[in-house]
Image 1 (cartoon, one colour):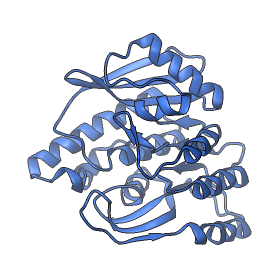
Image 2 (cartoon, rainbow, N blue to C red):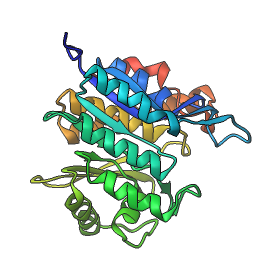
Image 3 (cartoon, rainbow, N blue to C red):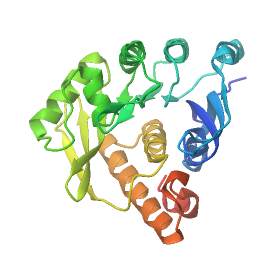
Image 4 (tube, helix red, strand yellow):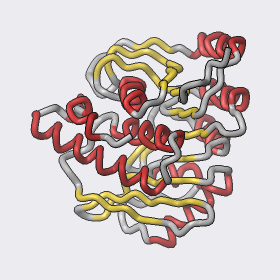
Length: 277
């Protein structure tokens, strides 16, 4: 019997109990968008690492057995999305998963979570960065921030002053790796944040939004979940990026209204009904 009568996305990320990030964001958002979200937990945390203390259980040793059962069952997926990966071994396992489960119509979304503001995460080695380039080459859609786009292409980073031709060059170099659709997120434009949208064969597009509050945990996971679900649902890429940006801004406004602390993420639950499917 076919297991694929409903659209399905395999979401590969950590499972964090408190703090609104990773799978605890992806699962409700993708489900709201009428797609079954099938989680692949890379690690389990009591709360995210932005808190002073946390419980952490690495799931690397269990991943291969977990995924081999899916292969044995003959499961198929309309989409595969990956987020933060904690080791070179995990990146390699995810790359193998994509190769093994990718069908002719499967859409692969890779969020290369490596760092921000010009700094690569302390847990990331140079070897892991090289492995992430290989994973990025398997993506149909790539969603890096500026730091990650620069690291993946060996481009010098700068916090501000990015012009259209420079961003286009970044995207062209990323696209040469494999992905046909790229959005570079969180570009600082004074009082605005911009997303640069690139698609092979189409004019690039810059979408700006006025800054609201401070940076919050999990907004990247929220963004990627919407992008992945929209892609599986056939929503045009630029329209999807705009939708995700507008919704995240509304979530941040609601969080400010409710006095939610930044490290607890944005309270998307309050307004998830406003997210168009």
